[in-house]
Structure formats: C-alpha cells, structure tokens
Length: 204
Image (tube, rainbow, N blue to C red; front, side, top):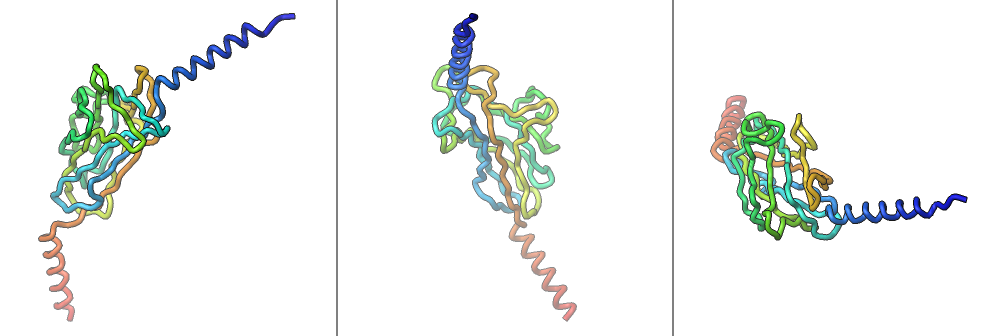
C-alpha cells in the first residue's frame, strides 16, 4: 500500500507558505478621493486628497504606488500636488517617464501619480482610517452640477497598483472616485441674474 503522507506534508508546507506570503504582503488597500470641499467657484483651486485605506482593520505597509487619474479637462485643469500628508515620501510626483506615457501632457484629462516609500524604515502605512498620501490640485474652469475624478484600473499600458512588503505583489482593492460641483463666479451670477431680470421686464 502506497502512503499518502509525503504528499500530505507537501500540501501542508505549501499551505503554510501561502499563508506566510499573504501575511508578509499585507492586506488589501483601497484608494479613495476625499475633496476638501464638494462645491467650489469657477477660478478656485480644487483640493482633493488621495487616501490609502487598509481594508483588513490593521495597518498595512506600502512600498510604492502608481495611481492613474482621470478627469474631464473641460471643467478641471491639473495644477500639481500639495504633499501635505504625514509621511515623508522618497518621491511623490507625476513623473515624466511614467509607464504608459500619460505624463506630462495633462490637457487630455489623465495622468499617472507615483509615490515611493523611503528605503530606510519606517515605510508608509495605510491605516483603517486612511493615510493621506498627497493632495491633488485642480483649477475649476467652468460651471457644472458635477464633474468626476476617478482612478481607472488601467489605461493603455499604464496600470494602477499598490505594492506592499513583497516587490511586484499588488495589494490594491477598491478604487474610489469623487464628484465636485462648480458654481459660477459671484460677478458672473449677478450678470446672469441682471440679464434674466431685463428679459422679464421687457416681456412685461
């Protein structure tokens, strides 16, 4: 009779190895957009925070992330970043050499953001409450009841990814979006109101 013990031992070892890899790589991390204000005026700066959120109720390490941004350039113009988060990244930028070629032409409404942790610990940590990675800044161009900023999974050769402890092991989960309302400038609104009043008077 042939014993199954060697095969069983191999299966158990493989299972334990799989558990150790999952543990070392960290849990799933979501990316969220959190606008400083849901409504702005034409000409204002729109500040939208990018947050890395641990989905497994514990802190999870981040070594590097590539995040695709997509927006409507008719309503928002990308101005840059405010690296105002609590972690001092080794780099936090829109690199001109990002894979996929989305940078540095931002007039088409897409870009790739990249953040890299310091080589010397501590690394960046995604918390259940969310780590503020950076704040993306746009210029409000035109009135709209709502315009979206999203994070696509991919666009062309560019891909959104969040790497944890293990190089090349992507741990990102859900990718959020944000909507901002853009209202007319007060002067423009008053001109529109005056014009509407004149039309009503003429009809009367």
